[in-house]
Image (cartoon, rainbow, N blue to C red):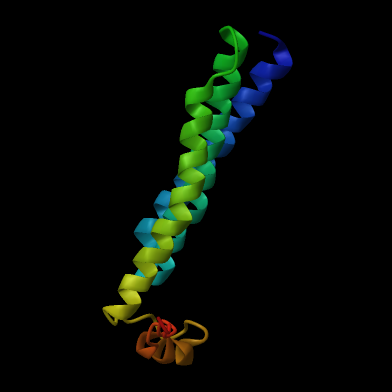
Length: 125
C-alpha cells in the first residue's frame, strides 16, 4: 500500500472520529429534542461516512477489487438518516414536544401541527 493511501485512510479515520465525537457530545449536551436531533443526523452521519469511506479505500487497496459492502452501507446510511430525522421531528411536533424559547420561528410550529393532509381529488367513474 502506498504512503499516500495510508495517509488518506488515516485522515479519513481521524476526521470521522472527530465528527462522531462532536455528534456524541451534541447529543448529550444540547438543550431540547429538536436541537439534539441534529447531532446524530448531521455530525454522526458525516463521521460514520468518513470511517466507511476509509474502510472502503483500505480494503480496496489491500484486497483484489473494490470493497462493495462498505459502499452499500454508506449509501444506505446517507439515504435513511435524513428520512429518520424528518420522521422523528414530525412525530415530536405532533406530540407537541416543547422547544426551547430561543428557538427561531416558533410561531410556525402551531400551523404545522394543525395542518391537515390534502384531500384526494374526486374522480367521476
